[in-house]
Image 1 (cartoon, rainbow, N blue to C red):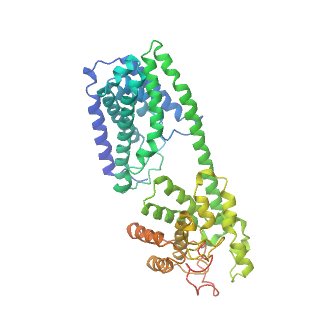
Image 2 (cartoon, rainbow, N blue to C red; image 1 turned 90 degrees about the horizontal axis):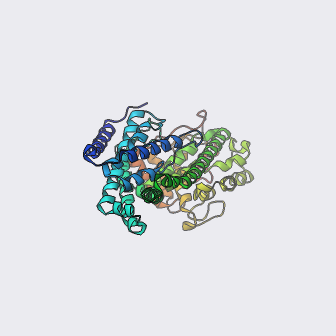
Image 3 (cartoon, rainbow, N blue to C red; image 1 turned 120 degrees about the vertical axis):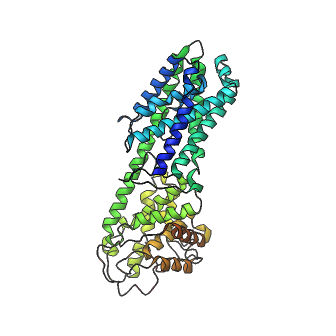
Length: 454
């Protein structure tokens, strides 16, 4: 396991110092400590419940931001920021270093809540909450929620830029995200759920100040708990689908031993192309799945054909060319795959219309399939197969460029060349043993043989 990079430790230390500065005015601020204690205990309890075995995983958009935002609407900024500290420091953390991750989470939430409370107070939101004037309270609350979201996104982007892996990733994967991509999509992904949490926090704050008191305010959390639990279950279902995908890929690797590891590398190359094209992170992930699953239809092809050493007959080739349709039928029920399903079906189409299964031409071929086609051919050429030796990366890229416009999309080929030029590529031997190439097949380039790059 690798040590945390020094730049990441410095970044966390700076954020933690800024958080402490936000809390320093507490002794001189008139604070309802019983409210701080109640909200802090409530948030800490929600943090623990969110990571219980009953739930199974934590909410990706934050555990119970309504409690933190209610504190921002009710309390002075330093006191509101203090609400997040006990829950963040006592929360369950699976990855190491536990202490560093807890400090980061606490400091990030302190800064976010403090900034939200400052904006809310500066816009006169507390007076509207005390008066129970919901229409007048909406604008300051909205500004506070937006500030909270922006601060969290700003800090998270900085974390990615310095190479501090996300809490959900193993610590061995310390990788710096390029600065131009570190903040991409962070606000867009989190603004909607945080806005919903902010509305619930505003309802809590108004009820807290009403004659019904804190007990009525706590009732707001009941529907939030139900919706949050349902959302968590949907993520568990997604995790189950991903486990199914892994099992399918492993089955393909076992069945077609000559291409073991090919699917994972095609997924990696597809992801590199998608990032080079500037796609958002969610779509990049979908295209990674598309690359991983592109050959899953081989499970429906007789093993004797996949492992045949001699040349294929026309009838045998037609059977193998059915694997995209088999694969599409296998994954069509997995809803979150989205456009990855089209890539599975069409990754053997060619721009000139001579591909299969439907002979689509040019832009008729889905973009995801054009990405996977290039990634598939590239890995096939840079890996040793039973019928060909691995080619150098430069030679493989030159072959793709030669076939660009007729077989491959030139935009995708250029994106892969740029990505490989920047990050490099490490081809691997995928066959169990290094057999000599078949005498019947090496005459044609790997990228131009029908079905050779699948």
